[in-house]
Length: 184
Image (cartoon, rainbow, N blue to C red; front, side):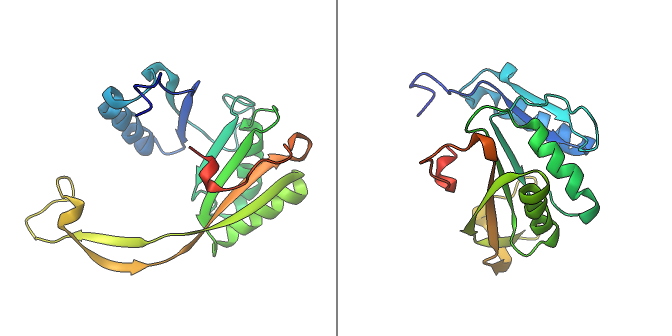
């Protein structure tokens, strides 16, 4: 376990959302798991992020930006793309990792915007996933206390998800692998 081997090399981790309810849940979850974390709780921050705000809080601070399933609306593609690039540190190797369903047209538009308008190097990797919608097996079970082993699958599917890796064209590192396994 990495905690017993000297802890994490993370300098900081920030969680963002625009929805105040999601931010409260995130803060609460961090507090609940703080005893098992391998780094100081002070290195974790939760804050509201509005893609349209300029300048963005913590602009140019992050060596890795991870965004999952956030490209929904075509009218937000430009703001999202600019926000992602703005948060990215200018150091060599700083990378944006986007994840989302391959059939979402706003995500595909975002990839084009990153490539063409923001002049970023964009690489794709397809991820195979098992997706299950669950329900408690017994009517008396509640989601708050349901054990995943005591659930039945309502539906199962194998959606195709994309892992998008975007870097500044002027900061490319030669010979670096571009796969999901690089994210430890």
